[in-house]
Length: 474
Image (tube, rainbow, N blue to C red; front, side, top):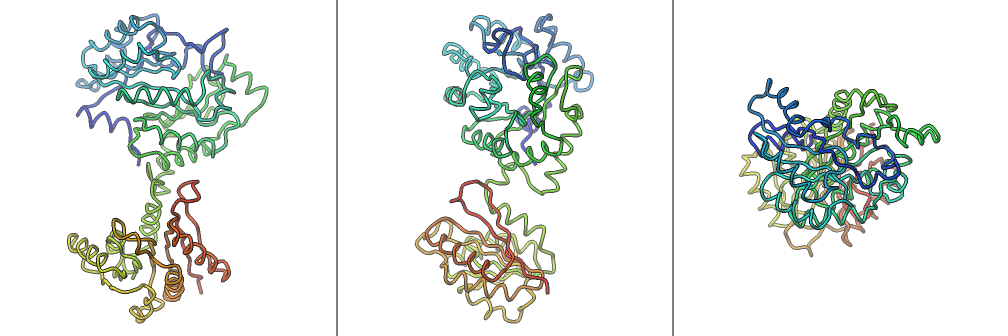
């Protein structure tokens, strides 16, 4: 359902790989006058890192000994987690980072830091390090909204973060972004905006956390003073699933919920049941039948509706067969498929695809879908689903498109040929003729009180969208 870190590392290294959290004894440039980010504990978000009083070898071996009992052949990534792990002279960084790379079975290093704490000299060293090991730089963003960053005393703005990511990616260094859901006064749309912004940055990974109110932090005081809303378990699960559907499928998900030290956690207490939260996320995605990157294309929604709706004995129609992908999908779900297209090239491409997949339950009709009632007269009242994927033939002549007048006529006729539970799916595109198609079809449906549902996968008003037209049950 989503691209996990375990899958990514196992695929790359062909064995089990664990991250070992370490405390390198670094400080933080944002922790001034006893104050840093309002949510951060005295341990610098390293509550589960090693003991800074132990040397790195001791910290590493404590974890390794526990893991070796169960997985003796495992590999490791040394994770410098606590505080800001590039906030020191490069000579200090080299001493610590090079040391852990010499530990047995360490195949990489992950460095947690801030976008305002990577100097030019540090960047050059990281670039060199990246050529010698599997390097990941983890950057805290938390939110793309500058008003939120100011409220939580983040100490940098979005522009600073974006600039740092750009510099790291120019050196081909992998970047993992940390975000927090449930920050004070952030709405669902604001949290979704953060995901959409991350998609634009071409980063390699993401960690999604829930906001924790911890003892002895400025956030604790702010929480008691303002009583701002903290997300419930149900709200958090919904938001995370929405974010997963929006997230580029190439981005590795390192974390879907965070840990708050039990003795320090004030709220929300439901986060203590980490496994339960993760299970709830999986269940919700399973319920939705969606996955990471689902919203990348509106056609994923078309496929989902078809898979849920069509039964093996159904008769279905692809009114615009194009390259044949929808026709092939319908053939695997239906008893019989009829596919129309006015272009000979489309019919030939669809026929080739069907032959390649040994499909025998499709009849191709080289004619206008306006004539659906003529060709399928014997099936009036028996058709379960009709698909219109409007526009032009993909990779074909863009001057040849579906026509708004013909499309409306065809949809009217197709509607009358549905069985009493049938549906029509229409995908509209934002070119000039597509805008006319949208206008005339929606106008007709609204004036005639015909039920339909509109699906979008983006807040871009010019993006393709889908409508599902429902036959009234008689």
